[in-house]
Length: 439
Image 1 (cartoon, one colour):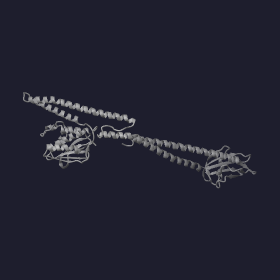
Image 2: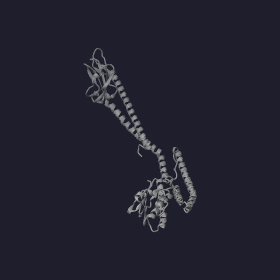
Image 3: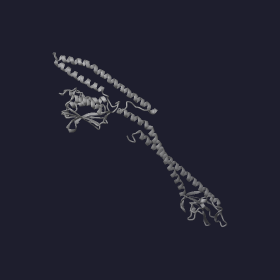
C-alpha cells in the first residue's frame, strides 16, 4: 500500500494540495492588495505634499523662490531622510529641503501644470518623484519637485510580506495538522474493521466484534450476518452431504454383495466389472464424505492450534500400529497452524500412516517456517509418479493396500487453506512429504 493507493494517503495529499493552494492564493492576493494600497497611499501623500509645496512657495523682491514656512511633514527637515523637496526657477536660483544635504533633484521632471511622477535617482537612492510647473507672470516658471526614496515603500512591503509569510505558514501547519488529525481519527474505525476482518480470516475470531460509527455499523452487521449465514449453510451442507453419502452405503453394499455372488455364476466377467465400479463408487463416496467433514477454508477457523498438541495422540496411535518403526519429532514448542483441528489431524494422520507403512525404520516430523515435513527412510516415489499418487484410487493398486484417498484428501484440504502438499527429498536422503502452509 502506497501513499497514492490508500484512501488515507489520498485524503492527506488532497488536504496538503488544497492548503498549499489556498494559503498560496491568500499570500499572493494579500501581498498584492497591500502593496497596491501602500503605493496608492504614498502617491497620494506625495501629491498632497507637492501641492503644499506650491502653496507655500513665494517670490521675494528679486523674483527668487522661498518658502513662507516649512512643510507640515517634519521628515523633510531630517538630513538624508529620504524625503526631499526642491523648487527651481531657472535664472533665479533653487531652494532645497533641509534633508537634502547633498545632491539635487532633476527639476525638468516638472514639465507641465499637471502633476506628473516617475522613478528617478536621488541623493540616497532610487526615488519616487512628483512635480509640476507654475507660471509666474512673464518670467520663467517655477518647478516644484518632491521625492521619497523607494526603499521606504519597499521596507514596508517587505516587512508586511515577511510577517504575513510567517503567520500563513503557521496557519498552513495548523491546517495540515488538523487535516492529519481528522484523517487519523476518521480512518481509525476502518483500521479497527480491517484488523477485525484479519482476525476473522486468520480464524482467531468467529465474527467482527466491537462498536463502529453509524456509517460502518450497518456494514459490520451485514458482514456478521453473512458470516453467520455462510457458516450455517456450510454446516447444513456438510450434514446433508454426509447423510447422502451414508444413505448410499447400504444400496452400494447390497450391489457389492450381489456382484460377489455373481462371480460364482455363469457371468463372472460382468461380476468383476460390477465389483470394480462398486469399489470406485465407494472410493468416491469416501473421498467426498471426507471433504465434507473438512473445515473447508481459513475463514471461520476457531483459532491457531499448537502442532505439538495435535501430534501427540497421532504419534501414540502410529507407534502402536507400527511398533517396529521409530517416530521422531523436531517441532518448536510455539509452532502453531491456522487450520481447523480436525482437518489438520486428518492430513497428518494420512501422511504419518503412509510414512509408517513405507518407511524402513524411521519417520521424522520436522516443522519450521511455513512448512511441516513428514519424512521417512523408505524407497520414496519415482519422479514420474509424483503427481499420480494424488489421484483418487491410485494407491489402491499398490501391494501394501490403502484406499487411494489419503494423499488426494490431504492435498485438497491444504489447498482449501491456501497451502499445498509437495513431494521431494529431505535431510539425510529421506523422502519427504511437505505441507506448505498459507502465509
